[in-house]
Image 1 (spheres, helix red, strand yellow):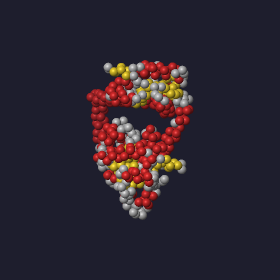
Image 2 (image 1 turned 60 degrees about the vertical axis):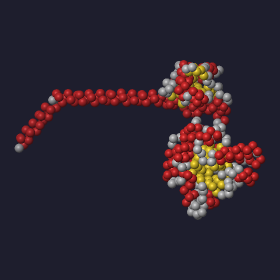
Image 3 (image 1 turned 45 degrees about the horizontal axis):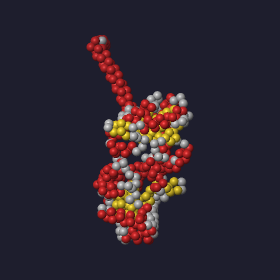
Image 4 (image 1 turned 120 degrees about the vertical axis):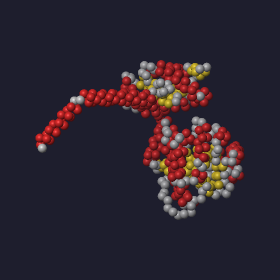
Length: 486
C-alpha cells in the first residue's frame, strides 16, 4: 500500500515537472510579465502626464499663457531665493477696466489682457516672474535696486500706457501699481500680496495712473482694517455674533407690524454694530458666513415668536448685496426655511442698494427667484443709490425702505420732505409698501403719517431688543426662552 502511494506521488511529481517545463506555459508567463510591465510603464506615463497637465492648468493662465499667482504662492520662497539681491513685488491693476468690458465685450477685453501680459513678459523676461492673479490683476517681481530712482516703475508705466491696437480700435489704458519691498530674511507670500495690494489701493485712491510704495504710513492707515478683520475672524470662530430685533410699527394706527433682525458682535465688553463690520466682512470675503448665521438665527426666532403668541405680520433680515451672485445663498435660505417650518410670506429679505452688484440683470434674477418661493424683498436705504429708478423698472419688489438720511429731522428740511413725498408717491404707483426708520420725535412722525408711510420704526417707539425682552413686551405666553448674549 505504501509502495503504491509512493508511485502515485512520484507520478504526480513527474507530471507537475512536465507541466512547469512546458514551453507554452513558460512563454505564457513571460508574455504575461511583459504585459504587466508594459501596463505599469503606460500607467506611470499616463499618471505623470495627467499630473503635468493638472499642473499646467493650475500654474499656467489659459488666456495669457503666463504663470498664475498660484504658482507664485507654491514656490514663493524658492523664487525669492533665486534672486541674489533684494526683490520688490508690483501689484498691477488696469484702471476702470470694467468700462471696456461693458463697452466692447469680453472678447475685446481679453485681447487687451493678452497684449498687456505680453508687454510685461518682454519687460521682465530675464526672470520669468510675471503672474496673473485674476481678471485684470497682475504681479511682477523685480530687483529692488533697479527701481531706486523709479527707473523700472517709469518704464513699466510707459510700456503699459502705450496705445493698444485691437482690430480697428485703438485704446489707451492707465494702470495703478502697488509696490512692496519684500523682506528677504522672512519672505511670506500672503504678507507680500496683502501689503502690495494695500499700496495699490492707495494708488487708486490718490488718483490712479501711478505707483505707490507700501510704507509705515499706509500700514497705520489700514491698521483699523487689520484690527476689524481679526475681530470678525475671531467672532465667527468663537460665535460672538448675536441678533437683536427692532419693532416696526404700522403707520396708520401705530400698532406692531413686525420686526427687523439686526446683527451685533459682543467682544471684550463692547458691542459692535453692522456699520462697523460689514464693509470689512465684504472686502475680505467673510460676509457669507455672517449672512448664513443671520438667516439661521432669524428663522429660529420666527418659531419662538410664534410659539409665544407674538402677533406680527413680517420678520425682516438684512443680507449683503454680494449674496446676489452667491449660488449657495438661495439653496441655504430654502433649506433653513424648510427645517424651521417658516412661512416664507412672512419673511422679508432686505439688501442695500448702495452696494451695487456688477449687473442689475443678476439682481433682477435673484429677486425673481426669491419671490418665486414666497419671500418678500425690500431695498434698504432706497434713494441713496444711483440706480433706484432702474431697479423699480426691472425688479418686482415688495417694499422700499427709505434712506434714513432723508427722514431724520424731516420737519425742519423742506428738500428732504419733498424727496420723501416723491418716493412715497412713486412707491404707491408701483404698489409697494414703504418703511421709514430713524423716527425720533413727534413732529417727524406726524409728517410721515400724513405722507401715508406703511411702516414706521425708530427710537420714538422702540430701540432694538434682545429676544427675551421682545417676548416680555409682545408675547402672550410666559414660556421661558433661553437668553441670547447681548
